Length: 110
Length: 114
Image (cartoon, rainbow over all chains, first blue to last red; front, side, top):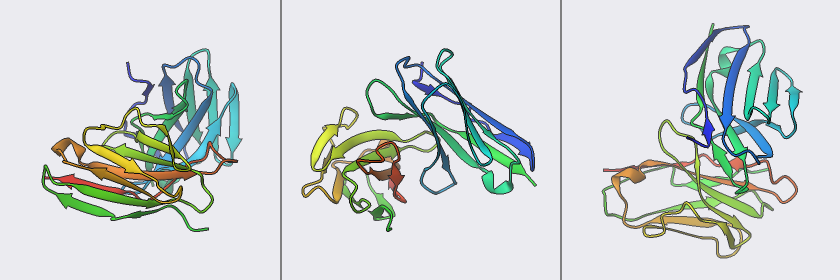
């Protein structure tokens, strides 16, 4: 079992729709969760962090965390073509280092 | 504020050759990370420095990879000898003591081993 699992996609949504990206993790003692965006050929950029159960909103982005289910998600409202990228879920677990998933590729169709 | 600098941006070598990558973190960032990102995968931590001390190198293939951060600022990652499976993007990141959860990544070095 991978430590952090994501569907590789691509997830294709029309412009203006809500994109929902999901991630599960295996380390039950994980405390910190992050979403990074990575454009093709570029380096990862942190867009959201979440530490407690529930929702955290920042502009068009909402991160959701459910520690009991070991599940974290990212919702992107009013998706734009410029949101097309790979979204990496990262978890800081008992080892204190960031463990990244393989990423979900999002395509927003104009 | 200048970002994380890395060089070279691209490198092509043949297997069994050696290669070195350089990273200069954001000024004042005490923590420096080297990641390996193979195509289609997420970054994997190779080594983490706090100032010039190693915090974690558990996933560094020490028979061929080495890294140093002698003065607690810039860092060098070396591979000797390179294997085909070392083809990847090598990312350097840094974080500050007060914002340890925010890692800022450099542009990366794309290594191709033929």
